[in-house]
Amino acid sequence: MERTGCASSRKFLHALPAVPSKSVKSRARTISHPSGESLSLGVVLQFLKFGIVGISNTLLFFAVYFLLLKVFVIWYVAASGIGFMVGATNGFILNRRWTFNGHVGDALTPLRWIVVQSAGLAVNLGLVYLFVDDVGMEQLLGQVPATVIVTVLTFIANRAWTFRGHSPVVDAAG
Image (cartoon, rainbow, N blue to C red; front, top):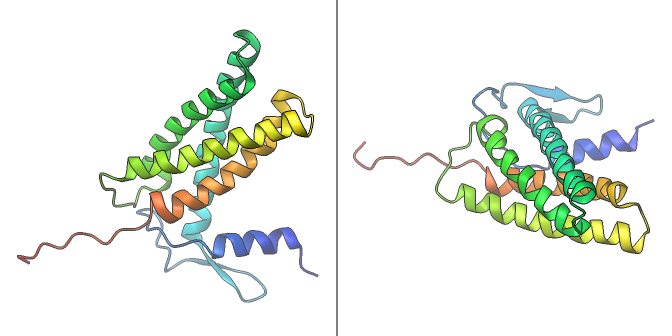
């Protein structure tokens, strides 16, 4: 009997495009499942690193959100937006240097990050508003499911677009 949670996680991770990593030879190492499916160890490690960075972003986000919401009594949507931007900045720095360290960056990488994070911010604000105003969740608790959903969406977008693998530029002279 197969557990659906594991199957959906495998399908999610298996469908992601490959991003090179300096520390992991993703072609050489795979994780095999009894069903015969395999998953690149590089993708798994990258997702774990993204998760660790995400935890630091989330802790930083919630510290800023709590401080603005409870101490400075700022409107919860504005507090969420400010906290999100602080966490996103932290995330760019850590993900670029650690999670996607094999990424051959270009001048557009920070711009792509901003686009993904802006979309994530818009989704986050819409969801937190939905969970608080429409569902009736408490303001701090309403942020939790929004954070989980946005984390998954931004990982997919950042892996597929922001930090996608680029072919190295080859000098025409040889």
